[in-house]
Structure formats: structure tokens, C-alpha cells
Length: 426
Figure: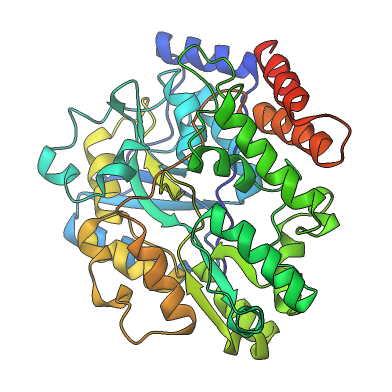
């Protein structure tokens, strides 16, 4: 199973106010915390992990309960599309679970309303040190830890070596190299080097490219941080690629699925995707998979690479905080993270698990090579898009104005200025 990308959710202002009020006043009662046999009960919510990983979690929970006979764990799996509404409703009503699987962006929005148990005085420095520092940082807000890192996904750049050989080029690792490779692939083969979508509802890859090329999306006051030479250079970069016919026309109207289709058809040389997708290519296009290699994420002068993080948070209203924290640490320890990474073809967020030979690069190919490349990026990888209210609106504004520049409806200078003005007026 390919795990769905981490989704970004918005908060309704009214619900935010209700949550703040309920947490501040301590109203509502959490769900039952004692099972029929008198043991403490920890209610654990995950996001769309059944039925593919039912055996894994059944075994993990049985092992934990055997080691902690005073605790029973009740596992509830929630469809990913329903998690936002269900957790908001549960937190508002005071019936939230004791441990819940979320992504840092959404969790941070509720952390700002004191919905989660602060963890800095609950987790020792020794326990915290097992996690990758940059990934732990993604679960902090205003210097306070609100979540425990769990599994990770990150993109690698798959490349059709046959197409690159035909064009006489090496796989690019930077956006500057990508522009040159795009020209040579187009000239030599008539095909495209790359497809990245400018549909704001589909992907944030282009927005991430701003950060990778050294642009701060917003400044310290929350105002547009891209109305400057660095921001204009990124607008110009994508505009030039499009106007020079080095990107397919569909990048303005179709999403990442189209990139996959074109790569599997041998019509584009490069595909930015997760290592966990490689088996799908092997199944759908074995001839393409046979000539496909894996390289690091394309980035800018910053060298930054993006990672998507899933975490575990503990609602502040839990009546079993010690048991909840202990179980969350158990789920995310080295051994269990490694086992889940192997089952789900994802990456662990602990240093020890990531150093396992399962992620070794030497002599690998196919999905093993893609996995090792993605693992090698983890020391420097970070969440590039800031966790902030309105991030989806910012993305839409940037993409809309960037599209206008690409289509020649605006100059690059006008597109940047209009995007900045639209954001600052929010």
C-alpha cells in the first residue's frame, strides 16, 4: 500500500474559538479511561492504516499490553479524509482519544490553542535524543514540544536512464542543472525532462522550490517574503521553462498523477516521488522500471530537501497522560519504527532505526536504491512549508500569479507584486 501524502488542513475560526474556550475552562469529559477488568485504557487513533497494517498493529499492541499489564490499548483507525472533522469534534466535545496520529501542520494549529499535552516536562532528554533533531523540531511551536515524530516520507528523483543517455546528460540535482537537462532532453528526444504541477490543490512542490532556492515565503510579521529579487528569480525560472516549451502544457491544469502517467509511458525523463511508489512503476511499466534509477531530491543553492512527517500527539484532556506518553514512545521507538518502515515502505524518524542496514545503499537498485537515497537525505531534510494559518491561501495566490506570468498575461514583476499585495491584504 502506498501511504497517502500528508494532507494540509485548515481550521474554521468558530471551532478554533470553541477549542480554546473548552481547553481553557476544562469542560467536557474524556472517553472512558478504565476497562472492564480495571486496567487503564489508552485510546489510540491512526489515519487510514487498516486493513493493510492490521496485523502489525495487533502485534504491537499485544506486545505493549504484555509488557504493561496495567494498560489496555483500544485502537481506532480513521479514514484520512475524516480525521480533521473527527478530531476537531472530539477535542471540542472533550472526548478526544489519548494518542492520535496527525501531521505537524494541522497539529500545530491546534497546539496554538492548547489542545495538546505539552511534552517537554513529560519526555526526558535521553528519550528525545533518539529522534532526528530536525524532525523533532517540526513538532514544536514557540519552543514547546507538542508531538512525537513517527514515520516519514520524502521525495527522490527517479530518472529514465535510457532517455538521459539518448540526450547525453546526467541526472540533475539542482534547479540550475534541471533547466539545462530540460533543454538537452527536449532537443535530442523531442520529449520532456520533467513535469511538476502548478495546480494549487494538488501539490506544494513548486511552493517548496521557492524555499529551496532561498526565498522566505513570509517574513517575521507574516507579510509576503517573496517580493524581492530572490522571489522574482524563482517566478522567472518557472516562467522561462514554460515559455521555452520545456514543460508540458498540462502542468497548468493537471496534477501529479499526470506526471506519473507520463513517466510510466516513457514521455518524461524525471519523476519526483516517494520511494514507496517504485513498486507501482514496476507493476504498471516494467520496461520503464528496468531503466529507472534513483537520485536525490532536486534542490536549489540552499541544499534543502523536504520531508513529510507524521506524528503522535496526546490531547491535553487525557486522564492517562503517563500511559499515553509511554505508549506513544513505544510506538515510535527504534525497533517498532524499523518494523513499521519495513512493512509500509516509509522512513523512521529515529536515528538508530535509520542506521539499520535495511537502508544501506551499496549494490542496491530499484525500490531498494530509492529507499536508500531517501534515507540518506534525512540528516538534512526538514519541513519546508511553514506551519501557519492560511498556507493554502498563500499557495493559491502564488500559483495563480505564477500561472499568469507563464501564460504571458502578466510580467514577472507584476505577478510578484500582485501576489504579495493579495497575500498582505488577507
